[in-house]
Length: 184
Image (tube, rainbow, N blue to C red; front, side, top):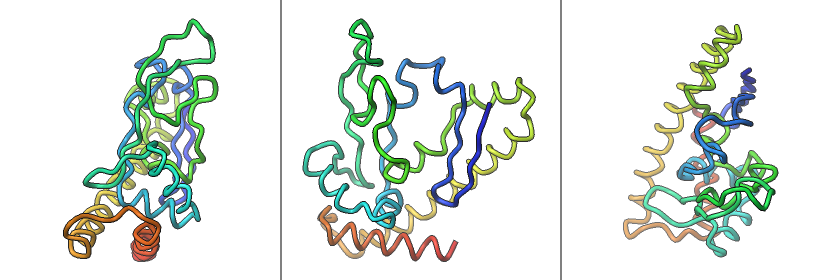
């Protein structure tokens, strides 16, 4: 089953298959996506700038050329002590999954589902919902890619030596994101 909640850049696509992921015991969290510039701006626009600053300071979010990486750590897949330990997103808890609010996650974490989830949805008779989810997914990918390209250019112009990853920079990203969202 697929569930689609369309809320612009905060859209969610969820699949019941994710709870028993056929690919990994920790699902997509074994390879968390990068937190791109537009993700950071979206998070700041939700009022969570200080959370970002804190996570960068404590090493859970790591600077990279196009935003921040979510640190991967070795941990148990479930709360069971016999559960295997694998490298997964630092924000993945073995018993409850993601420990951060959806508004603080990279947008990809909220709208990505694998091809297996789409296939399962089609098999269960939800072909129309699958088609809608695919279209929304593709539209979101295109929108975020476009926003990230524009933000990357602005950042390179304003900070040719690289951005400072501080509160003022994050505030700037939040304002730029709000502007891009308003134009979309």
